[in-house]
Image (tube, rainbow, N blue to C red):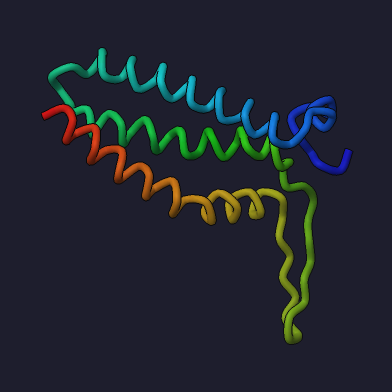
Length: 122
């Protein structure tokens, strides 16, 4: 299989349905972790702080789910030559680059969500 999803049978599922599956799983995990975090830290940390910590972990989790369910995991090594300079990128480096390229959106939602959770708590 060329897509490198979690399981080859996922390729038979239409892309929009795979997006929905990834989103539902990621949001369900977030809701469980956030509510558990609020319950366990009642009085120690604000809702905004709990949201921020849980959401940061979920940025990484959701990226992992999207690669495994929707887009496919980076595989192998690629070598590119630009203006005489050859660069080799491994699958691990491709994963980190992909994660970091998605971080600005995730961190923006984290900041807004943490602010809103703190605002609504008061």
